[in-house]
Length: 568
Image (cartoon, rainbow, N blue to C red; front, side):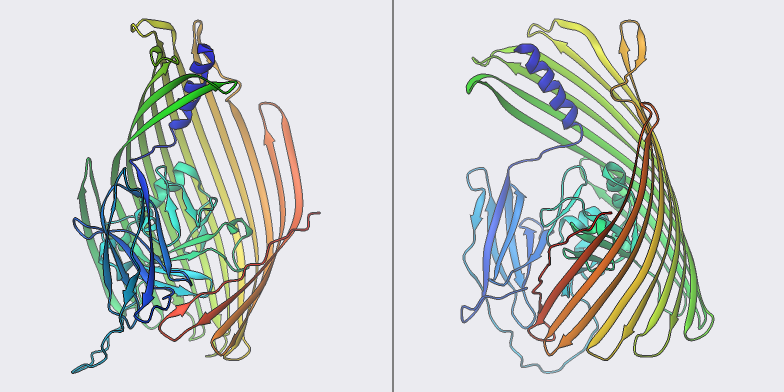
């Protein structure tokens, strides 16, 4: 039984290298109403730290006026509720080990007084906007976003959750499609998390969060789409900015950036650079009980400390040229260099049913990764008339090169600190290369002020070469670990077409769309000489309805049809 426990805890130790827990996590629930006790929908709710009023998370009340913040760490907070035309209101809340489920008293908002001595009109976007099928986070509208990166902003965004490894989920669903300026990154896991940490708030315009994405987007975004839109200068003449940010926590975090933009009647030239360092520390503690035939057979306690360090350099250059008042073409080239390192130390005790220690496991892990990428976009847009009828073409190329290494060391001891057997050493080398080529065209045709058709075609080619090489130290030297070693080559071609029809009727907006995707994929595992080939076509329908209470306070009602597929 002890051997089985050692194997189990060792496996759990390996698994914990990619996940860390934090302190107690609680839940705060509340309800927002008007002075006459009517539920107030789509009120903006922000969770603030009581100590310095910094924003922890934000969201909106639903159609019953209810809001909820989940997985909140111990501490004292303030809940700020605001809505257009109402006076904001605060409510205190505290999460503690004895009170992890906080239910606030009903928060009543009173109508703001309309008597004014004078009126000054300024154009300023709210921090959060609700639109048809999506929520917009206007990054510059909230001063607390200054100095943050994309992952930190997403942590505060409505419906978005980010775990300790940087994995993003939307409304509890994982596998969210992350886009940068409408383009897929084709990164996943730690690579995507490191890339998102390198994108700073100073270079962002908006974040679009779509829980029910329209047919315009790839079917891989069925769990949701998050589109991160970067800034692009619109002011004529020469302008630019330089920024420098330094944050001090357990470790220092800093970055510097610069951008420029020159625009005249026919030409727009822009560019930006930012680089810096992110460093963090996390601690995981796990307690487990073991059972055999429903009888308690032992336990284990584990403590893991993880130290992360990441550097990055991002560069973007672009040019737009207006051939005529109706025709504009452009090119954008962007590159990224992002090396990161990770050190982990784990200490585990295996205990007998009486609580005495029978085995001690010590594990040290070192992981390093270096990601390089370069992306090129050629774009063209023709505007037919002033009604919004336009045709666009985009040609994209992407190249991602990743080189990862890791070393895991595990030692087993008796309670008396006597070592058992040899030290277990596992060394990994994980290079990969991804090449992407994409072409798409989109057409927008307004039939009237209340009806619009959108349609488009897209084709993409993705070639991936992943080589995973693991070696294990044995009594006779280093030998290849065949169970973990593999060389996988994957090729995919996706051809898609979509159409979306939008109709506005009084305060209602109805949307219906259909996307057709044809996928041709092939994969080869070189080491065991196996391969596969798949060809199929899927249909993805989508529908939604939005009702606007008034021009300043939209409330979203969304109807999502179940997707179905036809495979050939």
